Amino acid sequence: MLLFDDTKKLEKAFGEEAAATLVHVLEKMSEESKRELVTKGHLDLRLAEMEARTKADLKATETKLMTAIANSKVEMMKWGVGVILAQTALIAALVKLL
Image 1: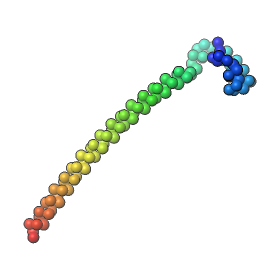
Image 2: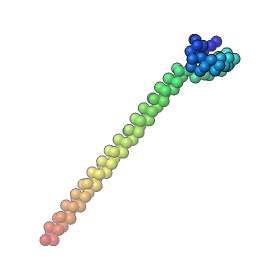
Image 3: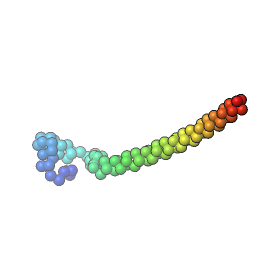
Image 4: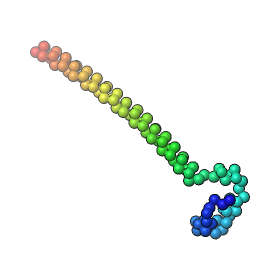
């Protein structure tokens, strides 16, 4: 069983001698070995799996970053309020001394 519909296409792509060699090797392969060959369908499936995993990883990273940003905002507000209170106490103490 040949994997190619037209050996002319194969010859055009690889050259006559390489095409003949490839056809010979494929004809001698066992059916089990032929089943293990990668097809475009396999590649499309792997690509879809990789894309799904990448999207999930990006979503997880985005969630972590958004949490870190929110935590940073809270910390900045804490420091800001603390500085304002300290500044107010300092000004009050200076006014009292005058």
